[in-house]
Amino acid sequence: MKNRSTGKRLLRETDYTLLKRVLCGDFSLICLDVDDLTVLREGETAFLWESPPCASMDELISLAPLAAAQMAPERGQKIVSALLYVHVPWDTGRKSLDEIYRAIQRPIPKDADIRFGCGFHEEARFLLATSEGRAERRGKAR
Image (cartoon, rainbow, N blue to C red; front, side, top):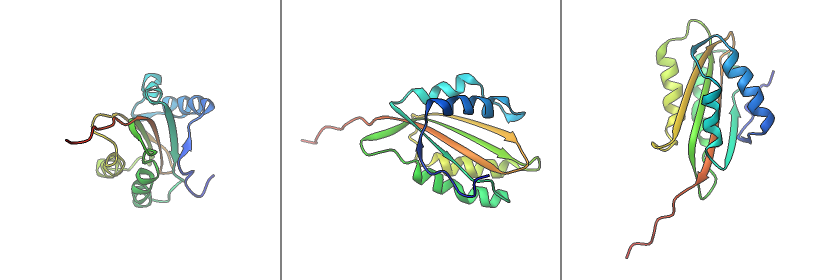
């Protein structure tokens, strides 16, 4: 297992197959399906960030702002869609899920298509995938 995050990396075609297997094959509290993965093709480029396994939900929650910061869009781009999937232990409360979601959501534009899923697993971890498209240019004020 990895001991640190992957950082922001380009989402490759082989990653879509892996995401389909991981996200759509688990027993989930909040289910995702193959159609949810299509939102990542809405932009020009898609990226992936994976957390390491965490010993506690507090540790996992502390990684959410780092993920959000590292997944900030490239210059001249904006996030058009995002997919957040969290693996949590059975005894996780809704408040912990809400904290992760809110931290991730902060840098994502309100008009972005956001999908959220949650599955049960003995290790707490999450992945965040985003797609980016061109940001609209604003004209100069006259």
